[in-house]
Image 1 (cartoon, rainbow, N blue to C red):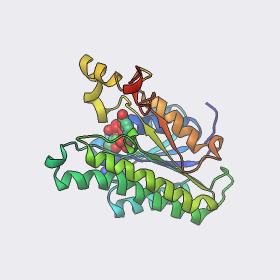
Image 2: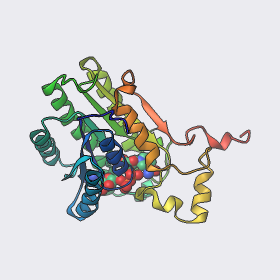
Image 3: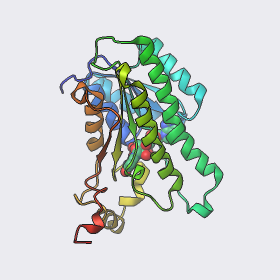
Length: 268
Ligand code: NAD
């Protein structure tokens, strides 16, 4: 694989599974030193298995436990990574979860949990990343002094009944991303989002686990296939590399056409 991220240091949050794990592998095989973040001790074995897979294939990776919704833990993660590897060049703000309920039955705890991990977590990590990019300045590794990729969702655009906390978090990510891009473009920092459609990962297992669920899901996808983590990791790699140097403040929808109003496919 071409080393498009050669010697750049990338923190990928929530990378012990799904999209984050695939980003970690593709970034490492493109030359990046990868920090695979996971939230709690119970995910350590799974994360270490990804580290082992990468290192046995010649890549450089470590695992790092940190709950992205905890300010002190995020500050410590960036400080530790900078101490170990000299800096951070790329952040993939990927960690996220769902706590679904009808609005009238949604507890404040479930609302707060989703907003604090999906949205506040992205703010905390981006803030520490941008501080480090500005402190370090140009190190000659990329046209930008730093790149941030925010994992959003088609639900930054499509309302989602029964998932108000999740949809609100992704709508928030859209404006957080654009505002950060506007604020720091002149400093040679690029901030973009990816909005995945339905991707086969643990977060949405019950959307594709049975034949009936899969058939229902495919009605929403004009391309008639569920996405794979690889579809998203390739887009993330492009956004992290200089190939996308003139792309800033954009949301890249990687959704098999889910946002194309499939209900109108057959003349509405
Ligand atoms: P996933 O469940 O495999 O990955 C989510 C990861 O986030 C997990 O590894 C989990 O441990 C981690 N995480 C949860 N809370 C955390 C915390 N407090 N601190 C650090 N890490 C934490 O599912 P995925 O599909 O790979 O999700 C990755 C991202 O993609 C999420 O932001 C999700 O909203 C987004 N996304 C996924 C889909 C899809 O269809 N799979 C669609 C749109 C958006």
